[in-house]
Length: 373
Image 1 (cartoon, one colour):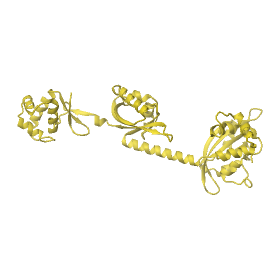
Image 2 (cartoon, helix red, strand yellow):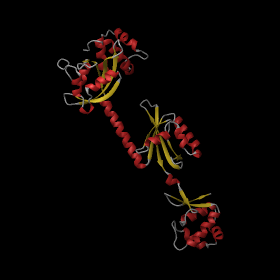
Image 3 (cartoon, one colour):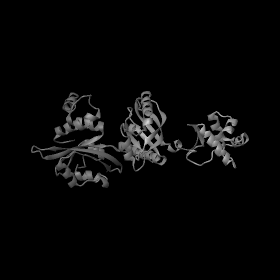
Image 4 (spheres, helix red, strand yellow):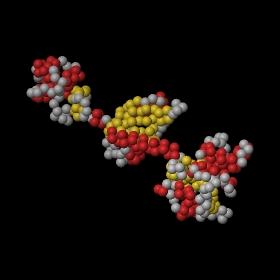
């Protein structure tokens, strides 16, 4: 049973707990709380017990400098104590708190005298040997002279919630580690396109988040790719669909690198669009190519065949343009790779085909190719 000074405690609990607990009808304010429960025929003590049972919490009170405390029945239940034999006190509560989480009486009194609200979490080791995680919130009341008089607080068991947070944090670290190892960047994006989070386990993660946060991601897309990327994302939002797009992203040094970004919509249990998850992979090596004008690499027979097809030339046309006999050209084209002993004919063939508007390319990954310029 909670004894004495009950009205201030109930007023505080109604503001700090009931308004966020969804136990009261929508729009009910703290001044209506007691009247609401009075209409139900509940006494003040039953009101406290009702709240503690529904919210899984306990209430406490302590005067400035006092060792003895006042606890509600819910406090004894949370701590697995007997209200008939265990006397509520600061020392008793401290003895049950994990050694790494304890505060001294002097620290508690200093906080009380400063009248600063205090919220913290700590571990409690109960007498049966189980350890529970508790969330404590304290508020402070003042006397007629305006000086702190006592603290009132609520203690809640948040063990399951704490375990869930640990699981989420571990999952975030795992995703970040995988992203950092594979050069992936994973973004969390609101349905309106606002970037709210980024996962990449690198030292410059915070700086990268600042570059992409909100709608700033638009600014780091290459101007030539920006309109198309924005249109793609807007369509994904409207259609609640995913997809993949390649675009260039501005780096911190001002250069651009190609990235391939895939979007996937995420829905809540009511099938409402909750967010998008996007994964971006660096593909700059795939997109960066070296041309025959920038390298002395020899072209291949497969490139000659493809280049002649792009130029719409017959073997005789290429022979006339390069002054290389058709038989040599056919011999070169028989092999996909390079042919030994024909470096001079290949140089003449490449020169002729390049003059026709064909460019030989050598990408960082994949096979050599050709393209029209």
